[in-house]
Length: 190
Ligand code: SF4
Image: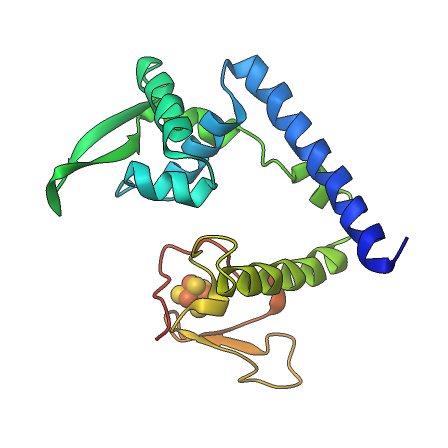
């Protein structure tokens, strides 16, 4: 097997473990992994999110997202509100119980990340950020609110320092371990 294939195989095993954990937790909470993903996405977006954007964000079809949203609504974990920006559109928002459940729902890859040393976690965050950036450029995954595509991000502004980058939004140096993949202050770079 080539390096490429061995690495892809290893990642597939970690992804299988993460999905297995999602199903196990979901069973205990009475939710599917997609329903859990929707709730987790919504707690990072208190302003709400449209169904079409949610489906694209989770990389599922619109009917799949719609079914999951209906189930969450029936359980009182999610509500639909009129979109102030478009009278015909609705926004999805987690209810108080939905937010509480999402906060105790462990991250899919929590066990994988927990098996790494802090140094490896920092290195992996940089690798993951760059992989997402490249795949986003190729159109393989939807736009993420990440540092590498943010207009406030100034890379390697402080060369040789542990916190080599700079975030102009908070006007502070940041290191590889501070890189964000879903930042609410993100603004797409031109
Ligand atoms: S605003 Fe957020 S996404 Fe943008 S550079 Fe700062 S931390 Fe990164």
